[in-house]
Image 1 (cartoon, helix red, strand yellow):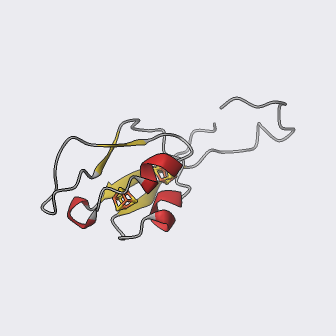
Image 2 (tube, helix red, strand yellow):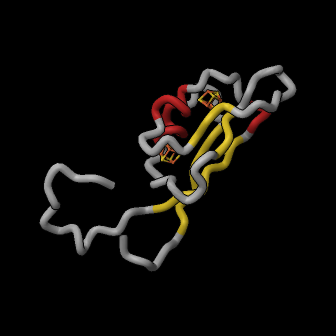
Image 3 (tube, rainbow, N blue to C red):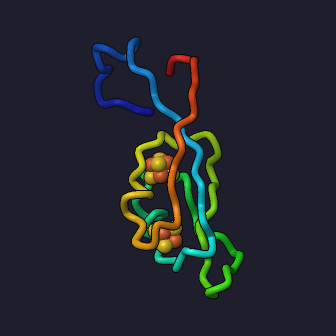
Length: 90
Ligand code: SF4
Ligand code: SF4
């Protein structure tokens, strides 16, 4: 991550990581999660679900910061994120 100034506590901050879980059959392809993910982790896939929509897929594996914004913003409860325990400091 690029900062306009170096945070004073940068050595103590640990960046969280998450695993994204997508429930493809619930998705309606609105792309809210894709547009608003702050780390651009997601993109709409070329696959179709049973409803005929393109569900998202993870395109930047390991970049998710477990902010849960995709989970909060999804109108169909089709995506959520699970925290990954990581001992390495960021
Ligand atoms: S939890 Fe945050 S960083 Fe991870 S995919 Fe969702 S919006 Fe992106
Ligand atoms: S916000 Fe939900 S319904 Fe919209 S594309 Fe993402 S997973 Fe699908």
